[in-house]
Image (tube, rainbow, N blue to C red):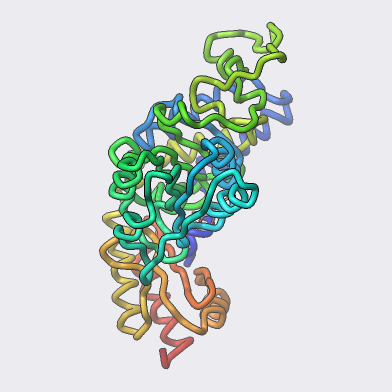
Length: 372
Ligand SMILES: Cc1ncc(COP(=O)(O)O)c(C=O)c1O
């Protein structure tokens, strides 16, 4: 049983086929450059549809960390940044770097209580000097689903933007960036969206583009770029010279794109996004939630302390144990994959998992560690 979708999900057959077809095309005809430019645009459109945004609000980069670094390198350098310690490290390091360089005044950590951060903590930490609040939509380490809409409201009251890494949420639960008031969202595909590595998406709300200008621009991020030329119907996107004496940022979110995309992942990415939209993946959460509830009940019956709050969860369940490596390694030997973190085990079933697999996992944990 594969129960580590929060680490990396399996790719779908569609993704596999799309990537194989790309390789065949490449081997037989060379780089399909013009089609690659079309795929960039198609990926932006599909990702926008998934989160309730517009295609021109999406940029494509090669991984989530690069996307976050691009945003960090774009914020107006002043004030403080508020972060959650429950964020993935990649959502914290760029801000510490900016602080160490004296480019922002401070990084303020909110205080978690158990597996989550109460809203009052955000109210205390966010003030009129705050430029950005950075909160993962679902915590990789506790499975807590944040109340992003409320945190966004508090941030906006103080003129700050909210940046949310939603890698642990998209593909499990429905996210509408406009409804939730998210200014910047970053996500990849290789976990719950069952797509390839090598591709990630940055959403930046049009309003926020007035304040977010990258510290450096590259050839895909300037106003006159090859994707724009392709969209405008150029048959040869190199038929006019680029203006190398003036680097103006693209008017839309493509300003965050740097160099050439991981081409094979644009093909696999398109297939993954189409799968997610076609099968309305978030609707399957009514089923996945039953697996999650069974897990929480079963682990509680085995006397484990479950950190993930039942009232605000997504696809991850985390429980405490001093024997995390022992349990994980034993499960793995018996063909059950979960992941271990210091002092905890993380279990992350997806819609394709079954109740039988959950019960098998619980019974096996009981066997491995009967005195839990
Ligand atoms: C919330 C979150 N963000 C980002 C990452 C990693 O991103 P990247 O693809 O940049 O390594 C992870 C990986 O586990 C994650 O859980």
